[in-house]
Length: 438
Ligand code: AMP
Image (cartoon, rainbow, N blue to C red; front, side, top):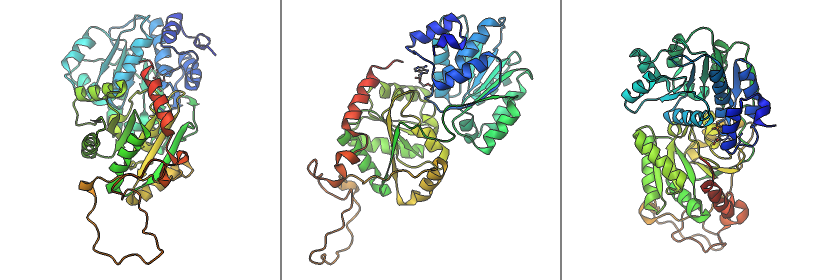
């Protein structure tokens, strides 16, 4: 199927072709005609499925056909600044041959340039909820002409506690409008919200609920907390990984791990909510260009990052909310690529792993932990002198308790079949990333 068969205007099909897209993705095939027909849509789709174009393209089409207004006629609400910026950037690309005026507003940066931009006129507004309400409170934005409303990553919105803000925003919109809701996962709260927001929606689902992308190879390594960083450094260095997104649970943890990896000679940056917008943009851009190998991120900061064909995602700590696991590993194997998601699971995280497996309705394969080196300064103090092992008995092998790495090929955990995604995959993906668009 071609984009033109979806009923898109020639100027949009042309922009899409210039992006290098040959055929619509499944979510685009299903959602675009429904949105063009003016229907409300409930779409179950993760990032990486092409969901942004699935709502942006038909909205641009509707905006081009309707009479112009001074104030926004379409509003896209996103949970994070990064996602807002990316959606706006995509909209600008897709709308480059139209006259649609696109603005983006989010917190963490000065409000005045956003007020000025809105004053000059805006058709499609992409916003995070807090800043949008600030602007509305200052009467810098008027939402009474909004005819199309998109709630992007609705599940994340709720996780981040935005339900009250969403309700406030809805009060500022006219009753008569088209509503589109996108969510990677479904919960009772999402269902409730959909029931209140959508009228007779077309339901579009591109992957089974809460299923993880088929192409993502998932692995679990069981490893004590204090050894995780050594194992991670080993995986990166020994696997020749060029690009890995690492998730930690806390901002402090992200900073500390970034410092530790950097001290081990791995180019690393951290990205989280305490970093300035500029620092986040810089870290992301260095990661994309390959200057930074490991990007250590908290859940919220990583949300919405558009990194093409990211080969490796590591859960340094498992998320507290099992749905976040789906989001995290959705960072890899995006739009047709393949990927590898590795979870380092400490003894205290067994319950979290169970929750994730319950959500996925399958167990995650536990791989033999490769041997790795624990640097001297962080090795736990030796236990009190123990009697020598009985003759013939072997000292228990403990992955990660060696002073020097075993020669290549001798270590039991290093066999090619157990090596996550293999070295060749890493370098292949790195090359692909370097030549990718965007
Ligand atoms: P999204 O799910 O919207 O974050 O999109 C994920 C990635 O897929 C983005 O980098 C898009 O540029 C890319 N993409 C979107 N639609 C297509 C398509 N039809 N063909 C190829 N790539 C696409």
